[in-house]
Structures are given as C-alpha cells and as structure tokens.
Image (cartoon, one colour):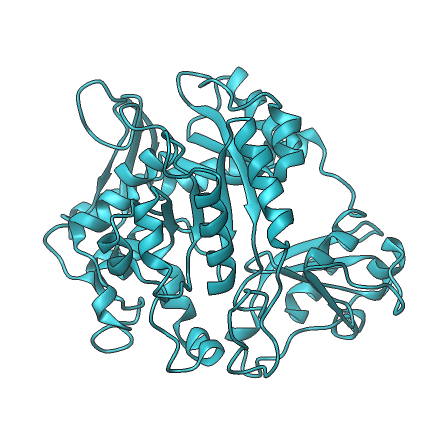
Length: 443
C-alpha cells in the first residue's frame, strides 16, 4: 500500500487530496490495520485518505486529519471508531465530509469507465446501492445523451439521499427502462473485516467486542417507518447476526409480508439459525454475494470461531425458508465478474479450488438455482421482472455470448468463462478485442 501511494504521489504531484480504495489487511503477511503514521512516512505534505476494500474503514494521514479538524480529543460518533488515523464505519464521515466533491465532468468520466468494465464482464443490469444526488445527476446526463447502456436500479444513499433524488417515492423508469430509483439503502452495521459487523456474541478473535450497532431499535424503526410511508423499497445492509435480527424484526413490524414490498437485506452473511425461517415467511429478499464466502471464509472462521458458523453464507438454507435469492458481487468490494460467483455458488470453492470439497458444502446450490439468482432473482428484487432478467417474450433482448457452455463444465472452468459479446435491447454494446475473441473461439 505504501509503495502504491509513493508511486501515485510521484506521478501526480501537487497539493491536492489523494483518494484511494482497496486495501485489505487480511491479505497482508502481518494482518494489522494501517494507521496515519504509515501514510505520513510516505506523504506528509498533502491530505491522503485510503478506504478499505469493503468501504467500512479508512485510514487518513496527518494532513487529512488537520484539514478535517480531527484531533486526538475528537470523540467517535455512535456506530463508529477512531484509532490513530483509522476511522471505522460512522466515524468515516468526520473525514469524508471534508473531501472535496467530484466535479460533474469527473463523475461522467467515472460512470463511463464503470459502464465499460461492467459490459466487458457481461453485466447488462445492476443495482446501485447508495446513490447520492451527484451520481444520480451523472446517470441522468448519460441517459439524456443516449450514453447510458447498462440498466441501473438505484437506491438512494440513506433517507436524505433518497429524498434529494425523489422525495415522493420511486421514480418512473427512464430512458427505455435503463434507469429507475426504487428506494433507499440503509445500514444496520459495519463489515466483518474491520470487526464492525454487529454480533449477538463477542468476536472469537477480539474478546468483549460485538462490533458496531448503527441504530437503536427505535432509531431503525423510525427509518423504516419513514421509508415505508414514502413507498420506497427498503434495502438494508446487515452482516452480523444481531444486525440481521434487528432488520428482520423491523421489517416484520412494518408489514414486509403484506402487499408487494420486496424489502431487501443486503449481504445477510451471518444469521442466527432461529432467525432464518422469518426471512422466507415474510417475503424478505436475501440479496447475497457468493464470492464473499470464498474471500471471507478464513476470516469468518477466525472472527466467529468454529462453533458459530451455522447460518453463515447460508444460500441453500435461505432457499429452504422460501426466500427469494438475488445474487450479485458487491462490486467494488469484489470483482463485478459474475462467473466466479456462479462457480462459488455451486461449489463453495475459490478460484484455486480451495478448500477441498468446498467450505460448508451443505450450503451449495445447483447451477439452475445460482443462475436464477443472478438473473431472474436480481430482476425480481428490483421490480424489473417482465422487463429484463430472462430471455422471454415481451422482455428486452439483453444477453451475452460466452466462450464456453457454462452448463457443461466444472466449477473451476466456469469461474474462468470469458465474455465475447454483450447485447442490450437487441443491440451489441460491447465486443471482446478481435484477437482475444478469435483465441477464445479456438479453444
């Protein structure tokens, strides 16, 4: 991380802020968090803020702390932690609020780059979980210019973000059903990697800590009640079993099972087995990411201990409750490439075939179930069924051409599937470079 920072600073001289994301201490030989001092030793004369891969922690150098007015006496807000320049979850806002906002031109550039990457991975539609007004404006500009290719189902960043975009409820579909704001993204806790996931019992590798609870029951109930009154679809991030229990209970209290609300829980990574049946029984959508299991398994074992793993990344158990699965990748936390996710879902193996036999293999799903969760399930979770998500009469002709038959290969080969062409609304919007495509066809 320090070397990348040094290289970037040398290539981009000046006094402006350096912003980055993607570090993961779990991948380092010594799994310790970075602090301000490590950044100061590389760049001391301009603000530096580097966000953890999961977006639930950041480390800032001393120049950034000074610019944000943060001192050793600054208290951490509820649901956050501060430690020597390391800011976790709600404490991140102390720094984030001071980072200069991106210009419209920068946002347009970022959206174009993101679309190109998604199309190259065969992604024709996606959910944007936490759209701020500036990003929504960029999406609208792309739509008006005819440059919005990927279909985006948007969820406003918190109630304030959703209200700023559309205060009276979800928007209509725009630009030939390429863009719609469905509702609101809320948070119940942090992430497992930064020990911010809110657990019912203390972490096995940090005695006395149960993670970060973002809201009291009454606070979270008020958010759900407000969102429901505006007819927003509610999507709540919940990783730990305590956070999932809070979300499930609030959803039930405010009528998740009545009408066609399709309230979602994002990640649903660790669920108390006694809470699992409530998800299917109340029409709650389990929005899960199979590659989290393969990248998190060793960390999950360390955080939870060997005797608390029932209900973790429990895809098959979730299906048995009658819940509708919506699979995704949680990019940019993981790669947007769906094929490693499909492979993980059916095998519980990572890209290197580990661990032998799969991790907790009883939670594997079939290829048909995994494909449904990545396609029809995702569309249903965004109120987009009968528009896209399947090749069927009356739906948009969104499809991809790949280099192998995904139904006739093992998980390791499936994970390495390459996209040759991506089509949206019957138009080819992306094709692999000619040499690469020819090489893949020759295999």
